[in-house]
Image 1 (tube, helix red, strand yellow):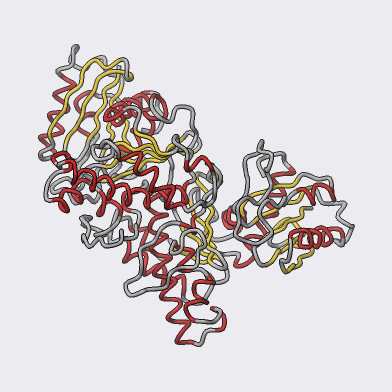
Image 2: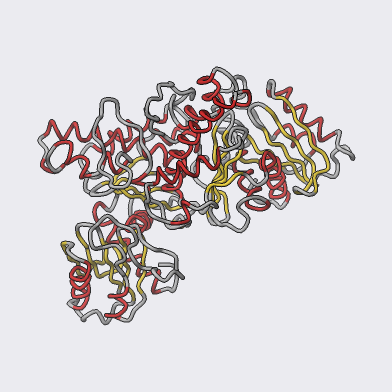
Length: 298
Length: 298
């Protein structure tokens, strides 16, 4: 049995189980300060049927940026986040201390990508991208069946995008202003329409979908040209908004301009919604736990 | 002994040898039509000291886009290029027919990336990007010591870029107009300044360096956020223009805006010139030949 935590910026989702058809318990924790939030997650596993004693490992799929280098003194921590109070938070220590089991650790989007690859929209594919579009925009890439290794980890939400003609919104990213996340994340949509995306009336919702799709297509085109994925999966609260995936698919075809001319890029299977919906991240955290139990990279 | 061809859009560079310190012969062929150009390359190997009989394999490092899927009927061919007459050209058949040896095949930039990894600026690194900036802009990525596999191959020159404030140049890319290649390649510079980059006076050259660096930094930031490379190597005719690499390094630091805050990204070792200079591609073609001889992927 594994424990998993999808540690997002606004909520933590904790699960006990082994896969989509074997979830024994799950809870949702609103994020407050690090100590309170992590303690609530520890308490959830303690309250599991057998008090957590049967957990072979725990996986933490965290919002970022995070320190992923195994030998680094801050491995397992959030690094440099604009989220007040969370920079430097040790995301794995509390679970190790409470349960004495291996704790796997990776980006939330990397875990979601692993889950989509095992159970969701990218089963059988070697190379793909998982993008979450919500409070932030982030992406995980699987390349040849493995998470993209490198210096740190990708931050796909921060790719540069051109400005949609007529768009004068300054952008909401505290680092870049008008990067993809700054132009097309939940807060960017909320700021433009002066209300949250889920509360928009149908006219505004249509305009928001067109807007987000335009920027996503621009960003996805760069990911296509940089990474050559076989598929791009879209998840996240805003990403799962009705109509967004088809609108992004159409805008991407326009944006690619027939180059390099692969029929796959403009097919219906290229940009797809997350097969696991909002459960991609939590299920991915179970895969991180499983890997940690096996002694592999978190 | 291996034969190598760096097949670029304006010239082919052919070499016989095994590495940077063991080049027996080399030649440069101006590109005309496919049949004439490929025949000239075949003739060069025939004219090698022993008539080409000691060539164990030949490697072709080609401009793109190309068909790289091994089982595909058009494997080894140029696919959809704006270069008149070259779409559909079989780039390996003439060498197989003439010499009866294995012929390795990959993107010019992928081969250059391999050569920089073995002999140049990225020795010992697992994950890096090689960007060539010249007639076109293209990139190859090595991830965990291997060329990035995927659907087709990267086309990094075509990532989207925002517009530099005040820049009204429409862009020179026939597919996208103002993508990175459309704004910062040799033809884009030549069109803005009404003369070729190498002929600019010092004032214009300084302006061109600032311009190209601004766009390169934007594009490289997306590559950093998409691929998390440990280093970015810049080659190509325009890329090797004096001052461009330092200017790109400075512009990249500004563009990243301190996010995700890795000191490596703003260090002097992050954006570097090609260690092999203009020989990265030709030397990479020898690695493609070596791989083909060993029966591995071209």
